Amino acid sequence: MISGPLRRALELRDKGCAFPGCDRPPRWCHGHHIVSWADGGPTTLDNSVMLCGYHHRLIHRGHWTVRIAVDGMPEFIPPAYVDLERRPRRNTYHHRE
Image (tube, rainbow, N blue to C red; front, side, top):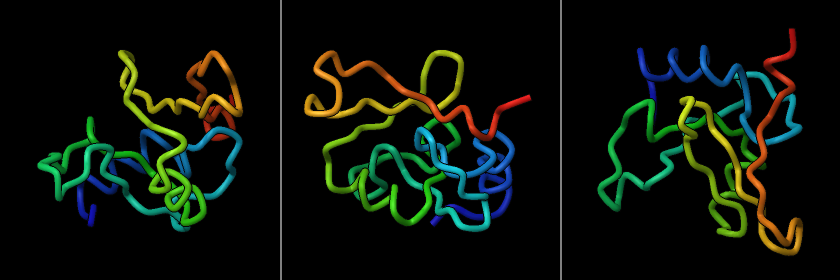
């Protein structure tokens, strides 16, 4: 579980579900460990992403993957049946100006 200051940092960075195209606000989201805590993944901002329940389950099914890009923002790699080139995607909904 991700809570306290780390949860707030996730809310500030992701501003809601980070999955591409999702508009769910932070209060509807969970903190997800990119590398599972059970597999030794740290509970840090660089290993966490905010996901709504639906997208959290989708990521756990293993078809999509998530990583933190060089600029510190989460990006999602689709399965080949969505994009043969598996180009990374980002959620721009929460970061519109």
